[in-house]
Length: 403
Image (cartoon, rainbow, N blue to C red; front, side):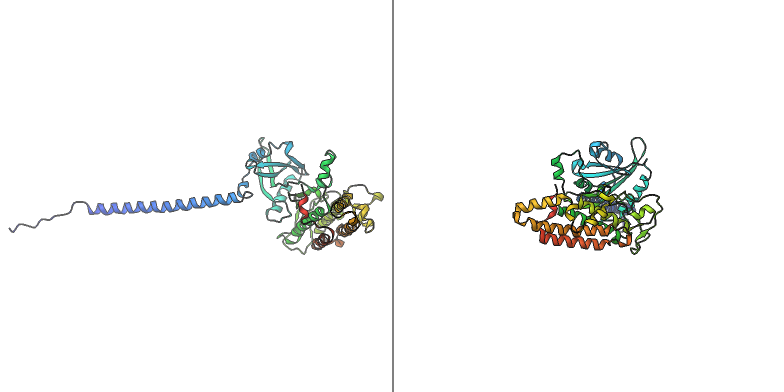
């Protein structure tokens, strides 16, 4: 029919269709990326939560506030007071609905040197890790409800408290309780080795050598297994750098470093702080542990604890040793083996004590250069323990006799 061809075009706008497709694709892509990111974030949060739960002494303690500590200690109640030191008071605290027990050392910032003590202890405990050192969990630097500065250190709780309380029970305790708090020979030997291990770590194995400067029974804490832990680094000193060949550290602090009776005699005339000073304190602590006598006690003839022990060795060891050590050994022997073995066991105990006292005397020598090296102390005490276990007892694990 010779009609013109129709110009037929499909309905719709090609340009509009292309734009819509692009927008839809973009939205779907963004939704996909967002979904993946959300999944990754949720997975990370779950993993972090699991880590926090499996390590209760870690992250959740890092943010303890003044209010948290106030609640944990029942308002720093006197019933939770564990002890009072030179720069503050220590309280028992309960967190996490009773599942976590802590020790909170609250600094008395009105006391001269307390703030410096806080800084020194934070620095000392920040990078050291050893089974025979008290573990710090966190610190709190805030203000109290009156707006005053508040500083506290939070430690792992030591269930059996301080060595001081075991060696010298207070007079207010009844007789039964005092008997329960006696330490036998094996427990004392284990604890004195624990303290020596801690000192060897501080002196020879830290990146920065640390001098404790205040080693004494009240600064040795005992956990539920009667393992000794050295604490209170409030007046510790650090060596300049990590050179362990230098055994002295210059200190500008005026006055006596440490506690009377335990501080090295050279400190009293202004000598520099040194590892030798810690060894002296350790020697006095050892002698106190096995004699039951404080270094500040009055001895016949104006003798010191060091001289009291030195002049009695070796024949007079029975007269200077804590009588409890012999009584408990003899009672145990009578129960287990009969009276016939008492003399043999008593002689073994005396032999052991002589060796222990000799180390204590060598550590507390008047002249610093004559004192034992802590490495030799650890080796010597471990040999004594090994010998006594082989020859003096059938007990499997002396640690288990703590309450």
